[in-house]
Amino acid sequence: MATARLTPAHGLVRPDKDRFLDEENPFEAMMSRFDKAAELLDLEPGMYKVLRKAEKQIIVSIPVMMDNGEVEVYEGYRVLYNTSRGPAKGGIRFDMQVTLEEVKALAAWMTWKCAVVNIPFGGAKGGVRCNPLEMSAAELEKLTRRYTSGIINVLGPDSDVPAPDVNTNERVMAWIMDTYSMHVGHTTTAVVTGKPVELGGSLGRREATGRGCMIVTKEALGHLGMQVRGTTVAVQGFGNVGSVAAQLLVGEGCKVVAIGDRSLSIHNAKGIDIDDAIAHVVKHKSLEGYAKGDRISGADLLTLEVDVLLPAALENVITTKNAAAIRAKVICEGANGPTTAAADSILDEKGVFVIPDILANAGGVTVSYFEWVQDRGGYFWPEELVNERLTTIMKRSFGDVLALSKEHRVNMRTAAYMLAISRVATVHRLRGIYA
Ligand code: GLU
Image (cartoon, rainbow, N blue to C red):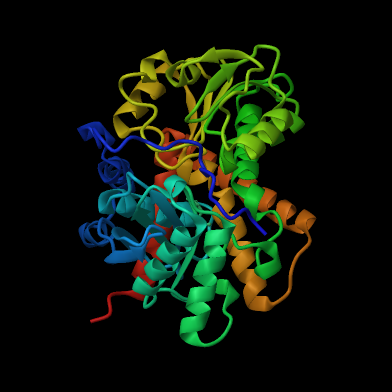
């Protein structure tokens, strides 16, 4: 079973100030990409209006009796952005920076992400504004269960299926699954994904997002005529996504020359021993104190001269302030929304090949889909089969997006949005409007 206390899943915790410069409002970032793709698709005005809105937004107050006997009240959200293609799907994050606006953007991204990889889900996201790193396991369990109870009416294997995200893990998913099961009166494993394997989780789910990043990075290198062996990589964020992607890329022959998390970034031109760095993080909860390389700033990590940059932490790390200084040839967006919309054109002008988040990090939700299928069928797959099917879907999706980007002479991000929006619009047209 997982450890009682949470560790930061994606490696960074942001200070609660200076929230969103204009450029950094995540919903605006999503919308400006959406608008561009919608225009190229010549989307009809009614469809445009429908797809720009979230279907359902829930705000809940979450009172928790803290260990010191005092009551604290947290605010939580769950946004179901679009369910036309199937049950809403998307993670839940516990973070000081969670806002409704951010959750809405992340829910929209989940909608497009599920459509890009063509799995039968809509998009959702949830979040609770809290600092889980300062809370005990008992407080976190109470918070999780009360939040679950607050959104219970939308949850269900056929309606809305959460998963882990920033600062949540399989332990949190187990609490959600148990709370839901107690409410409905029977064990319902398919209500969440990213659960412990003993409880209906899928083999390969924990590594899936990082594995997906590795697969599409290799596809991109192949497309650009670059060798995988010896490719240099810098990874920002050393949680579940960054560390696994780094490990798997090294396994393919790449050289990871820089890694960083909220506590520390290091550079080592000879290549970093990723297994050793992961062992350090398992022991110390972060990279702090890891000294096998030259210490660099988090900002410098992003502008290193490497072949591949893999931002795998949080939103808004590549902005108009640093985009011109990026020297990587390929960016693989392991995080959701790491690049602001305004930075896109700067990267385009520089000829950087960006594998957009809604494609690059879709491996996680793809194996979530496999987990949901396995739970509903009550029949579990060996890890090799999970990985094989994930590889097939990631390669096919990369190929679909690349083909569209060539056809319309647009970058990979715009092509991914075009593919996603056209798939979602198609089911809306088929279903019509219920009145
Ligand atoms: N939180 C992950 C994401 O942003 C996974 C979502 C899921 O598996 O439902 O893609």
